[in-house]
Length: 91
Image 1 (cartoon, rainbow, N blue to C red):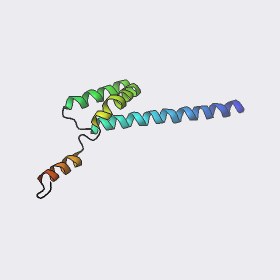
Image 2: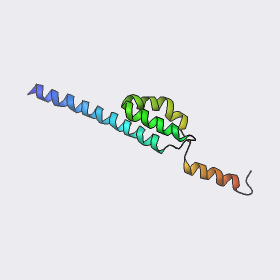
Image 3: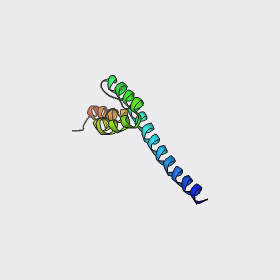
Image 4: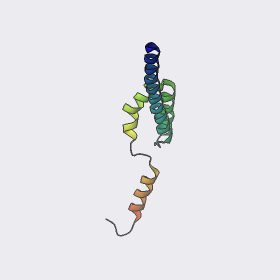
């Protein structure tokens, strides 16, 4: 009985770890897909990297792709910037 109990506890921890890894991978896929870049091929390449290399591609994206794109491509930020530039009376 103790062996079965330990086995289920161990498998539960592994399942939680697998679920966490899959959620991070899913986040990276969505993040790459939603990020707007100047060159659309950047997004395609990152999607291919993340989809083909799974967790390794996600780690590569976190270290090399996500920081470079943070804040870029945000449509509301671009609209806000254009509005401020065209607003009369503001310095």
